[in-house]
Amino acid sequence: MVEHIRNEDLENQTFPDLSFDLVIHLDVMEHLFDPFAALNEIFRTLDYGGVCIFTTPTYAERVASEQVAFREAGDIRIVGEPEYHGNPQDPTGSLVTWRYGYDLPLLIQRRTGFDVEVRRMQSKGIAVLGPMTEVYILKKPARSYRPAL
Image (cartoon, rainbow, N blue to C red; front, top):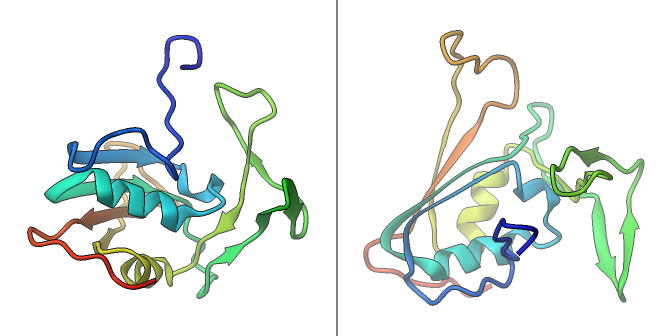
């Protein structure tokens, strides 16, 4: 708990298997050192047929995703200029660890058991405008499997 807000390490959740029908997380994936471990944990905690919906910045000019910060022997190694995003629980912000490209759906499909759909929209009515409006919809098949990593 941080004050009154429950916080989970998405890479090592404390929830039992098959706990949820729906998991939503917004603009978190770009701050994880191992986002695919987190997605596999979400896969584990989703019931069969469950759905994970998330957003993360996806750069139109990037074909390939790139990890830009690494954990190495207890230290953090950053490639290039560090970037931080706002975080209401930490005034220093959250370090960006990945910059995602258009290969992200394929990476997710290869490294997890999820089926992947991506939606992009523009809407003046709900103020969804400009770039990086992708919404990722991950579906756990009704008969699940775990691919070899």
